[in-house]
Structure formats: C-alpha cells, structure tokens
Length: 318
Image (cartoon, rainbow, N blue to C red):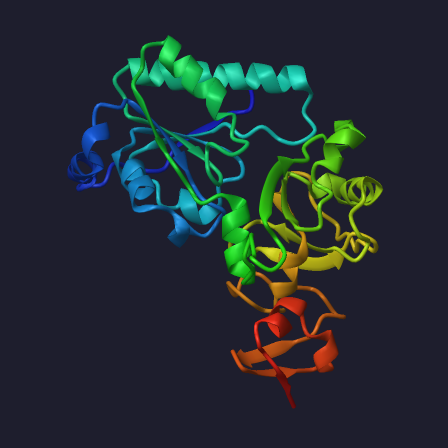
C-alpha cells in the first residue's frame, strides 16, 4: 500500500506466545479488543506507559507512524509484523487522504483475519493523531478497539526542559494548537492565543516558525515573549533552542522531524542543560545557572535571573 513499509522483525522468540497471553491478561477488561490504538509518547522509550508496553507484547501486527522513535520501535517483539504507515510533511491533501484510507483498510483486514493489531502513534493518539477517523472506521467495521493514551509532546518536552505548562504567577491557560498549515490560519484565530498569561504549545511547527512568530506579534503578543523550539521530543537525539517572538533564531529544521514550540512566560523557568541529557539548550545569551532553591550560582547578574526563579525566592551567588 502507498506509504507503507512492511517487514517482520525476526523469527518468533520461544517466549512470545506466553508473553502475549500474559500481556492480554494484564490489560484486564479490554482483553476483548482486537485493535489497540497506542500512544508511543514523545520519544524516550522509558516514557512509554506500562499498558502501552503490554499492548506491544500482545501484538501480531504493529502499524506505526513515522514519528515513533527508534528506541520505542525496538520494544516491538521480533515475531510481530511491522508496517510503517507514516505520512510525510509536504504530501498533498488528496494523497494524505488516500493513504489514511488505505491504512484503515489494512488495520481492519488484519483484525478480521484474527490478528491482534496495534496502531502505534507518536505522543498521545488523541492529540492531533487522526484518532477520530480511525475509531469511526473500526466501529463501522464492527471491530472492538481500545485507546491506550501516551504522554503528549507538550508534557514530555516541558518536563525534559524543566518547565511547567501552567503557573499561578503568569500562565493561567494552556492552548494546544497545530501549525501544520499555519499560514492558512486567519488572523482572528491567532488573537485567541495573544494573551500574555497563556502558554501556547504548537505542534508540527518546524516549517512555520517565522510565520508563527510574526502572526503572534501581529495578534498582540509582546516581542519579548520567550519561545523554545524542541526537535525530536525526548528522544536521544533531541535538541532545543530558546529564542523570543521578536527575534526568532530559527535553526535549520527538517520538515519530516517532529518539532514543538512552547510560547509564553513559563519558558523563563528553563535552565540551559535542564531536564533530560538528550536536550541541549542552545541559548548563548541565557544565564547558565545551577544550584538548589535558596542559593543559585549564576554567570549573569541577579537582575537577569529568570523572573519565575526570582519570584520563588532564589538568589544568585558567585
């Protein structure tokens, strides 16, 4: 089928059947489901949920997106048939629709043949994962399914960077939006995200960073609003760049790589090197700070310490 790469990972292992039965039993009340739509999380394999891991051990067939990390794919049993069904950025809408239809048909065919099917999606399947289309197709075909949530990119990346998504002192709302076609979003829609007390998590924005920053500035957000651009979520090769709306330092980003933008005051919590070792914050003008609450060693004056840290009672020491 178009957009699919099918392979079997290897010969069946001696314990595969028993492991699959144990996994099915552990899943409990959802044992009757023939298809499990599973969130693979933001990249790091150890952020996969226990239920998601059990679903993978149970699978005869795994249909996975292009954004699922290699380290998560490595957890799929050797006996399972893997089918790559990722739709790449830049493909036309008609081709995308045809590919989605073929994907659903393949999933249904394997389920009707009595195979245990996992539809593996990056992040959380309910967040910009075309979940609605797939569960409608499964329901119409009379196939029982289960949805296994995953850690979405906004949560995973924020945790790795050491920042909250909301904050009593200056982030009272979280807006989660997609920028797959940011240039098609009308100006009125961007105004909904212009409040300075709002954190904005923008998915699939790698090819649209400059346009997004310009649209938010035009909608009324301050040029000093901090922004962090995260590529590859929490995978081992993840990177992060800190910038601002008024002076977006846009790195070269592959359109096929997963990119998330976090916009808002909460980014001030971010410390270079914070969070998972895989994420390296490229912010040459940002303070390099280490320490514990109450005492903070800083390479910059206390006046330039991130506002949330000053508000929380941290102080700089030399």
